Image 1 (cartoon, helix red, strand yellow):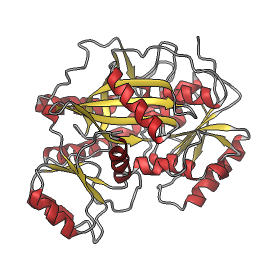
Image 2 (cartoon, rainbow, N blue to C red; image 1 turned 90 degrees about the horizontal axis):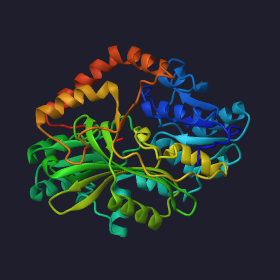
Image 3 (cartoon, rainbow, N blue to C red; image 1 turned 60 degrees about the vertical axis):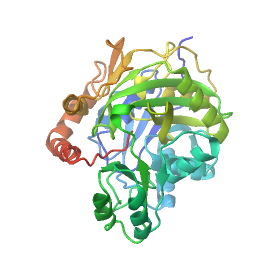
Length: 415
């Protein structure tokens, strides 16, 4: 069955914060735009890659930080909705947007379509502590973790901890002006932990987590769309080959790999917690005990979602739009062996992984096909716009991340 989308219902890409080089938003614009769905997007300005896409009907420049008052963000979305002039499907690309939409469903429901979910659930899932508690409650494996409330708690933890450990911001979805750590940070020694903790304030907003050695682990990802009954209408599994920064950041290279065990685990967990909508999960398979340990739960589309498409042409964004507009979601097997590459970060990631000697056993020897994050023959301007914006500030950014990696302080969100 071919994908037949409702072309009378547009899509709106929603993001809060200043990160113009976001390939996930471009992918969503192309995915629905190629079906003839009118696409709109919140952008930092009129010169972002998303704004340059031939499939974008209109960009709405709106600079935000993610720390604005929720009422102001809701009013901004409603203002955009009035300018669109008809019901539109909301497609959040970050946690701030997903949480805001869930917590203000009544205010936004008159202008937009989106999955109706427990208003408190996305915030809890995006929180490292909230996710850890849900994993414990429902018997889902996750790395051992501590949630210190003071420097004294950290000192006590350091006395008995097995190093290295990993530090993350407890509320990772909240873009604070001064986060405790820059994403995921590997801390090698007790002295290093105590030194860093002196800058975390009276109430450190961190989670200290068990480190899963990369030589004994594999990084897996699950993308799916669940309907109002928490039933998967589209389910995909894959393995992450490279990320940037290495082993702790955004996916740079990944493959579609069939993993029924992982798909079943994800489906059971979603059913238990009653989530509906798009999910992006990061899990690490620990060879030492044979368990998939849930690291991150993104209650929205992931930046690399275009890795996954079934034989009927359905990805999670298309499944979202089809379901919310009352259309059937065609079934089909995922494209096993398909590869995804993020051009601007995969080259430095490749060099770093060769240096470390890390390999992914489940990656196919040869891809069955390749999807590039930025370059598309039918839509070349986003790639060119990315290059123009990336070369000058981006090179400096990559250098800073590389330096952090060489010091052993891996940073990243795992998106």
